[in-house]
Length: 382
Image (cartoon, rainbow, N blue to C red):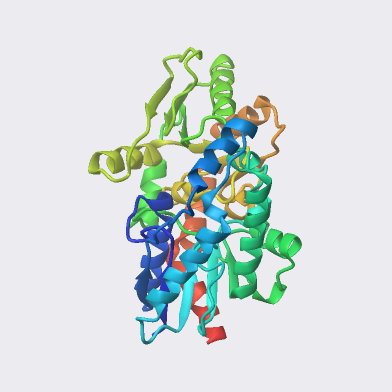
């Protein structure tokens, strides 16, 4: 049995943290027979005057001073990890889902980072990162370089993130591996259940599902316009928006339903999201920026193909005509419409795509498979 100290700045036993990724990641490792000692949540300690400096930077230069990569805060995180690590007797490896907790950690055990992106690839990719101050960018790059240099294994959820680590930080290729994240849901489906699920979906109307909390970044306008174009072309359509609401100035037609945020932490919320995943034909989230996209794994768990964009780490998750289709960022609405209509008119092809999507979940995009891969990789370095 491998004894792992799981170090994270937040509470990894809280399913609401980081969309549940640290929770499902650590539980999967436990279920594969590894022993987990949790280190975290860690206390964020600000230096005197730090918050005032943050405020002045924002008001004067419209720049953010990010505590996530502040050198003093990160050194303190590593100090807290080291103190808790000293109380554990049998730890063989330290594993962290982010670089923050281990960027300055010195220890005798090998460090493993398993995350979805490196800092440099996110700057200007996600809009919040684009407003970072120069010192925050410098510290973010330095912290990432420190964490990766200390790591015996640098695991990433996508080829995009892994290649970014090699190209932007010069990380040794031998210690960089790609291990896709799984779906952050408890799924007990088998093939027979999925086949019945697919058969029960209507053939006379295409049902689209948008799941995302950021209307702009997740491509809500593209989904909205595509649904309108399908309707105008005579294709019966139903679109369900979950996670965010369209801008107030947009008039919502009756075939588009806006549910707002639905919590996975309540039985009612879980039941509603499950119903939508089960009954829809496509998950439609054409993100402008995405480090990975666990929502695509979750959709595949219900035999739901994904329509999305070819950006960031998405191409590791969604394979064209296997579990969905990726489109370029400048694809016109007609490209999405044509793809959807062709499958609905050749419904046998749609059913094959839906079954293939579930196969991708079963064989590649679940936490059990991911944990087994990580277990093998850790064994090789011990």
